Length: 454
Image (tube, rainbow, N blue to C red; front, side, top):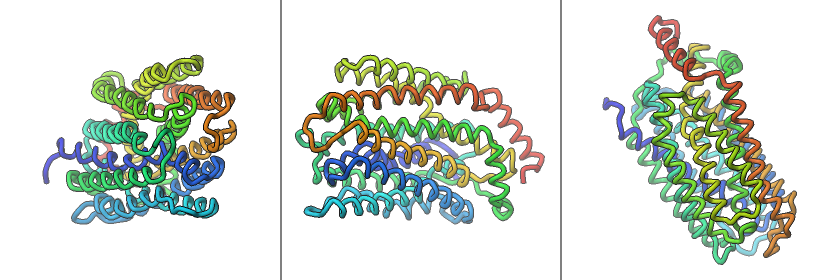
């Protein structure tokens, strides 16, 4: 079997590249598509997002347990599911952006409900095996950190493309266009499939869980281990809050630039500048982590992001260009958390194995994904609710000043507050600093050698 190398890293990068072509398209533009093209109220959209994300969260855990119960085949344990389920996932994604002319509001509400939940369910069937696969590509902690970094690069590459090209495609004369949205969905759907196939082809599953371990794994023991896993609990809470912030910013930014700054095409500019700032953080992250540790670097990044967004809140009259530049500094800060978060997950999976003697990557990863989906649910519901609560009216060409002020507050003060909370969690509550993480790796290695792990 070939050894771990750059082919695996690039292949794993393609997986999140494919995931995020649709995920970022949906998180950035689906709400404005529903409100401005389907004519659905923001409150209904928020409720839909809330229900769908809760459904997806439980689908993640169910699918994670299902994957852990499957035996490894000749093509691996996870890659076959990515291959099989990527096609229905992309088809469901394209159907989300299909507008059938002349239908009633009730029809569009029902259509949105069915297609969005269907897409989210299929997303679980691809994303859970993809995320779990990192644990069987290599068992080396340093190489797993590399996979985390490359995964983040794939996500940022998709964000760069969607952020730069998306607004240019879907908006015509500063208005959401139904045909353009559908064209964008087809384009990014084709790109997603190509990326998933590259991920399946270029990645190699090297670590095979023994049949003995699979037979002795039971949910009761797993659940007790999860409840005792303090690093997992706190990284779940931190990630949940982080995801809320990311989704809220993605939703509100559309209205911020379309209505507050009066030019939706600036979204392309901010997408490019912010993505570039995150790419700058990538080569810096690994050396800093080796020197200072994941927890320490992520905490510093959160502090920087909180300061920047608080500053933006107190500067309501700046130009769109200045806003973009300052927010790019904030993204540079929180990019460090985003880059190392998958390595955090590897650490908590190791801690779960240390506590229970079970290597249940699919289950633990699905629990982490569960928290992210809950964060998406809260952000989706919160986004729709607050946009409606501040008085946004899609029928108006120009929003009242109090609505514009509310959009600005949602885009700045709320993110600043959440980043402060995440910073406090990482500094004071998440226990695995650099020293304790290294000790965990050593203890787990010794436990495996002595045969106490199985």
